[in-house]
Length: 313
Image (cartoon, rainbow, N blue to C red):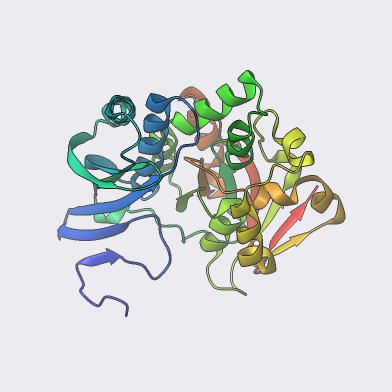
């Protein structure tokens, strides 16, 4: 049942990135938890990616991470030295975020998993939710797509060193600068692209079917290197098909778009970029400040009133 306590400012009703609880008139606490299975071979790099993925939910609410707990599932057959490397990678990401790592919890499991439970702080009037966009607002994406496909290629030993390096670099990058730039420019809505893929998280921004829609420019979508080649080879993660089953009814593709990028729309991302809804009058400022801050924000569409995601070349 939906919570009725007035202290809960953001709950589960809209599938937002994190919950937000009011502490006082000028302070709210934002909290979330996430963990993932390995996506790269290097333990320390995996730890950094997993932590960045967890921290992203806090940034996507317009909040600043404050403290975190390690969440670990660990098989007895793996050496503890490997776990230490993973935790070291997580600590590096937390330190970059200015977030204190204050402990955690470990359980035995057959498959290793790692992530963080994170709390952050935000002023109540500055909370950014996944809904709030208006028709005519511009849609931006701050990281390239394709980490699910490339992770599958890495596990199969088919990704080139350059492809694997590019995927790891984007997954390890915090969404801190992107969120701060979007907030400063006056973003109306914000969410990150993770397990539900671009189509899934954009659908959440649109709200119930028949309300807000979006025109998506397929030619503007940023892809990681090697993604097209691996898609053509059939290296599609199972989560992509689950996402397509869940969200395809909200997506209307032209024939050209269907042939070129349909699977990319549903590819589950790890530590993906932010989707930003920006008023047209604020777009130039956002683009300038994003460039100055090293954020590769790409305009990929515009919100409308069709109730659908229209994907066109």
